Length: 493
Image 1 (cartoon, rainbow, N blue to C red):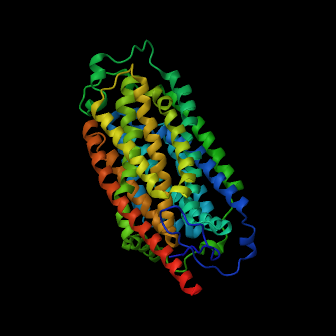
Image 2: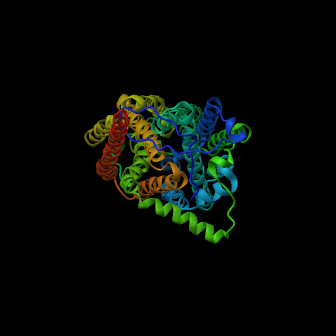
Image 3: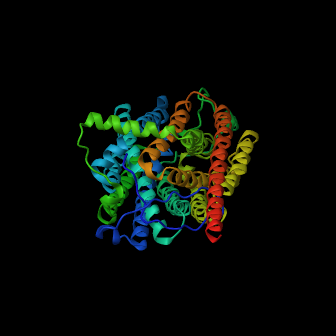
């Protein structure tokens, strides 16, 4: 393992509650390290955040339409399952191997190319092109997200040392800023998709019949004989227009990152090309990810990490198909989910800053009742095209809870495993991918009501174990603070 050493023994400000920061000692700073001021760290944080915003405006827009766009033989959801299956296994070793060779910055940039090729494949969506593209973006995603999370974990440690703050607080703030910017991709994507896809709206469209509406929501099952023209795919020229715009915008983001994002100092990452053979290096890297499972906290976090993938797929794909597309049409998906993106961004930003004053436990607890309310509403409510406000409300509530899950779980991994960031985030992407795989695998085999039940049960299981981790770590913090106070009193005597 390549440990990530934070600079300087700094006395951090104590968080209101939560997890103890893991601070590490340092030697003398090199000239390369000294130029990394607070402003430079923030510059790279914002640049990477905007790069992801641009890339996922395009990728996320197309990804959210897979269950509606490529319905034939379940091609859309099956290829999403392939994508996340490849992502899950590649997380075990590929990210750290690529980071060892290319460094964090260039790992980000190279992996973006896989996403751009996947977008191009959607313009000619047949099984051969989509399977290959899904495998490619699965490999790319493991590297992209692990390098981004590890990059942030490193610069957060440095920023905390410079500011004299706790690593927990800075990690939560950095991921809050990142997800606040990142989640606005839904707004940009909604503007592009709604403008383009409205051109492909069927002529003389009258909306679904009462019989077709009755098959939406909880009653949406794969074996329903749907004649609803809301599911009709757009003409090829409209689809290519959308794909062309997304490819062009993504290339702009790639160039921006290549020019302006700074590579991390080598002394921070201790990254070097392996002197052993490739096969042996892969075994070592695989072992590092698997060895991270020796930590009890890592094991306890697995269920809520899986839920992170489940809930994103459930609300992003299943709800979009069964409630939005079924009632209002494919061309309305991005427009209906636009407020959700705004709420998500505001939540990510505000919670990332609020955690400094409250600690992580109240933040997590604030999201749990909202998740419960959404689940009850979906079990009891029968959607109708005239109830647009309620159709919009569910994604808005999910935007709030997802803003909490994404920022705080990422920050939690950073704080719990600061010296094993690549292995820890490899595990994070692995188990999150398991959630994506499960959701997409059962998508074309189960009714919406069953999917909702499975997602709800897993939410309660993951939340219970998450609370165990949070309480355990808070107690450690209290013990550490008490020990310091006793030491001070003893010194005075």
